[in-house]
Image (cartoon, rainbow, N blue to C red):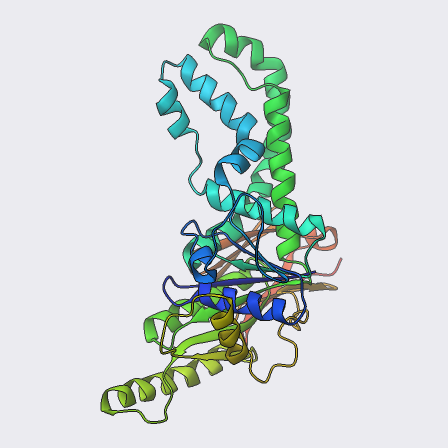
Length: 384
């Protein structure tokens, strides 16, 4: 099974690119599901269908899944939320306030990821296309499973031991309920599910495609996003340049846009090399409906033999012998910082940070040297 994620700065046309890719795939005989982690849910509008609680058929071979957030919230977050709601009630808060407080920020996006995992495990689809939220939200979301794993792995076993000893005292002294095994088990299930999401999205069958428009501000953000996605271990196998003005028949006003876009596309090719850049021309009308989107898909992947083949991109993080390599395309030495804490390596690239649990072969070795060369961070560890 193949998974393609589309992200980019808000307003660049990532939903159109995702929908066009899914429509083209279905037309070529792939059983395709298109789903959104963006709470705006523009996919249904682009495809011209009414969403339902289950995947809805858009055309033969193509289904749209718009997540029923409320039902999924109860399934994945119900026991934890129920405990917190009851706890706040014991503290004197009314039911309405307790309901509002116990909804996690970003919970809808997390639920969408869990739904994506379920659809992938169902085995119904050859291809799942994901229309992600704008880049900042997507990066936070994709970093969440690993960050949560880091905290839960350390805190949950300790929490269980503490609750066994301190639970009765909490109830008698503070007059509030301590979380029981059912709540802790629910937390562990959520933790395992998010770990599986990360394994799925960083696996050899998944990749990200960056959507941008040839504008300097948008291109700068796309460069940073490419660096950050690599930092977190996600393969990027292509970029999509959307709304490109055709050079033919341009009047004076459009000729200025053509010149500016031509220069920025050249910069993009240099920044994203060796990744291919697929170009979508500026369309005369908004693409809505499967037929129009299929035409966009043909233009998007013109000349590409198989747009849905497994990504021909190595994983960003590799370990060979005593050398750890992390691809950070576009990063400069001033952007990157490296620190060691016990058996973990802390890598910072710009505003984003990743804590890497070192493999057993390197965890007890000291760092001998580290350097960033040609967009690759190389960390060499001492021999025993």
